[in-house]
Length: 214
Image (cartoon, rainbow, N blue to C red):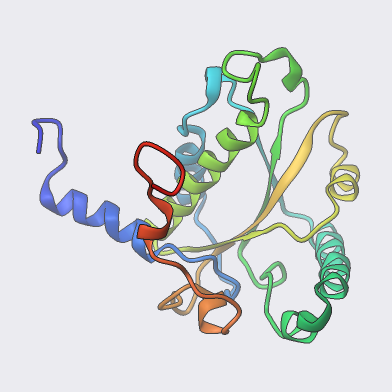
């Protein structure tokens, strides 16, 4: 422990938020207070980014017709994904994969246009812009859990169609549809585990020493 460590209570709260974060699909409507939403977006904006490029852009969806159109894009991709899954298609279609109609807030997280100008930290790893946006989304997710709000990351959509729907400039790219809002309860484990779709594997299988799989 160092002099810069948080107090035991603060550390426990941080690890609790990490451990209890869930990819939520079930929401109960309600609303997110403006000051809370601002705090959450500020948490996202404080994420690390390569070269301080801050590639994230967040589009808040407030028009019901636009929300319905996004729901339609997700549903279309859900069907195409089921077709691609072959023998697991029926099991996939039985899963609830989004909460677009029920969540209090709908936010599209996207990458900025003109990213080719930023080469600091991206000359050999251009995908670091996406990594930076993922960090912002994770910050938002953890902050939402600390505020008692659920959040779900939806990636079932055609990015070109969604970019067109939101009038994004050339080069900008939507990455996530984020469902945010109050929930009746948080899943006790990841929903895909509870539904029998997949099992999480232990940390030991993912940590190596001095070389791959050592």
